[in-house]
Image (cartoon, rainbow, N blue to C red):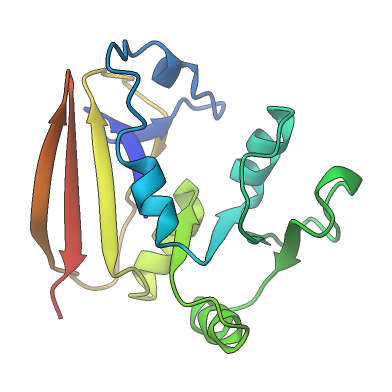
Length: 171
């Protein structure tokens, strides 16, 4: 998992807006470790809302397979056929299916999808970049869990005005 949150723990505004992320000055023109992170990823798993947001940007940003968790979509738009596919089912079954296809290191993205993977205890690492903005309301990164999950801080890095923390699951 690699994601940015506001100080108050939101990943997007209530309507799914992420414009507030582009308001962050980036004098170093850094990708905040994203390229290094992506070099270790086999495939992406995201929810329908995140997928639709990415498709709306016009240019497909991924060179790795994307799997979209959705109960409502039955096909992907023509422009991403062969790049993205719809999958569904319980998280453990999905991860087993993807590992059988050779995808072991998954980038999980999207609020509900991240929460579902956490509930299934299927996230081993979290890289969270905290943006010094208070949104006040929006789509939260974390939701309720049936049990406690413990992570260990691996490292923290400061990028200008952002704090990025890398956590690993403590099993």
